[in-house]
Amino acid sequence: MTATPLTTVPLTTAPPPVLPTPVLPAPPNDAARLREAAAFVEEQDTATLLRLLLPGLAGPELRALADHCRFAHAALLVFPPDEATLRAHLTASGLAPDTPSYPSTVVRQRLARRHGRREAELDVRILRPPVPGPRREQRTVEVFALTVPPGSDLAAIAAHERAHRHEAHVAFEVARPDPLVLSGLCSLLARYGAVPDGGGYNPHEDGTVLYFAAPAHATAGYRRVELHARGDHPTVLAAHLNTEGAGTESAGTEGAGTEGAGTEGAGTEGADAGNTGAGHTGADRTAEALLQLLTGAWTTQALAVCAQLRLPDALDTRTPAGPQALARTVGAHPRSLATLLRYLAMVGVTAREGDGFRLTELGALLRTDAPGSMRPLALMYGGPFYRSFGALGHTVRTGEAGFDHLFGENHFEHFARDPELAELFDRSMAASSRMFEPVPAHPVLVAADGGARPATVVDVAGGNGELLGRVLAAHPHLRGVLLERPHAVDAARRLLDAAGCGERCTYRSGDFADVPPGADVYLLSRVLHDWDDARCREILRHCARAMPAHADLLVIERLLPEDGSTSLATAWDLHMMCNTGGRERRADHYARLLADAGLRLVDHSPLPLGAAVLHARRTVSGPDRAGGTA
Image (cartoon, rainbow, N blue to C red; front, side, top):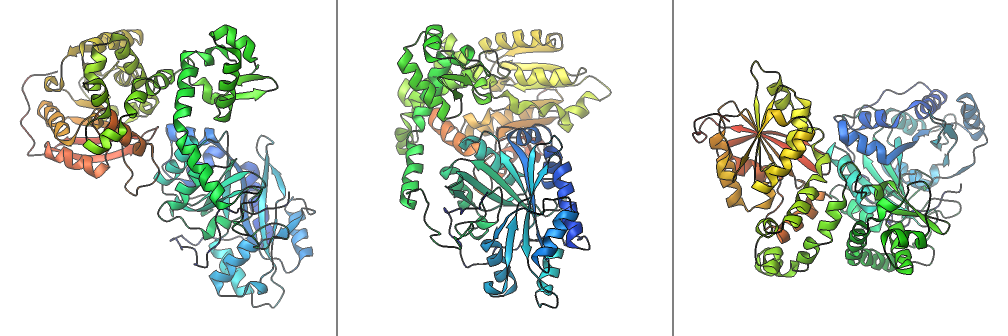
């Protein structure tokens, strides 16, 4: 395939930032390096490679990343004296010697800037010989070749580049990309030390490329990482390029058939670097990106109606169904339903096949019986919270929660007076419970289960018992106490009984002032973000007074990123402000609130869905606890 330009981001003349990276040992010659790269591509498992690139990545976050992207290619720069030698090296490495080559303008520019040479002195080509993966899936080795004739003064460049491997990178193809998935993947890479390092959109191949510098302590042998997503994702790309540390120059690092930021490809050589191709100007693309943002409410309502009609329950993931038959099943107007199905296909919830539609993996999360079904969230965000978001302007102008302004009371009081709405709210909270998956393995809970005496875990405002149930199921020697409102206690009792944990759990109806004293571990999950700082201090003081000196507090919340990078927490910060009067916070903000309550933040670790678990303990001078035991 002829390489074509990534045209969203023009090259700059500034040199790329040099990140501190250890010098990697190089094989003795290019043929050996090609063999090594081919073997790497052929043998490497996606999940294993991600762990090597992002040390510390494990558990649900590793599974989430591996589920959404696959290893596609590895790239390296070699230095043959002539083309015949390059072809011989490809043959000796088991790679196709007849692989076509194209000029690689971007790597030539990078090398010229890095070594103070004129571009005309550097003859750089790019080749992509295919390599089968472990399951015979199609992969490639991306080969950049700088011709270094015998006796040439370019030998010093070759020696430096062999040692430092500036152009070496690995690329991952994102499966079923959508803006939320891409933003989540970018946030996850950044959380484990990858630094945004440019990107671009290729209109001719309809692909978006996002580049990262791997953390310095990565052990994969490659210092750069590429995410390649089919389609145009201007909002995600803009956020990626605007992230602190992201550059425009490196958008030209070649990969995944995209070969450069407005310069690569047959005969282009940098011409029209700012032209988006296909008749679109930069202004057109900006307007399209803004239109996508402005029509986001349409997507919310389309998903809510999809959930209301139980359309995912009526669709199959393999066999398509026509709108007429579906309309009879769900009780809808056929032509109107067809329009909705086309929109849902555009956002990835359904897939069109011929005249019919099938359910995608994304859409299956809206099924009523799906594990961790997100149907309640669709109904909540498309229902009462959708209405209250219409009062966001009132919130921004006055500071009063839009929900309170619209309904005349806060959402807890409003839901408490409507049993059906209260149940929907509790189920919507449970829909995000996949963030709890790693919590039972937290060292505090593991240590509590292994103690000499049975330990007690108190879940403060524990909702329907989803988190406490997971903890008790994982640790058979622990006992639980759930503190909640009366109607929620009944729901929690049913869930914990069904999970076989009911005999080890007691239930208390009450408020935050009723936190039972004397337990070993206290859980406070998705509570503090509902409240302002003053109320948070009050809640934390109630917990601190109940905690013995040896007790631990685990707080689960979404954390705003320290560097302002893209995060689900940023969206939830707006949501909490408008609907509860609360907010999301950074880790250092929580540390201050904890300190005000006589607690100290020990550490925090990431959880799925942009959440984190913060571990806190009482300070020596913390408030006196109440007597008695839980």
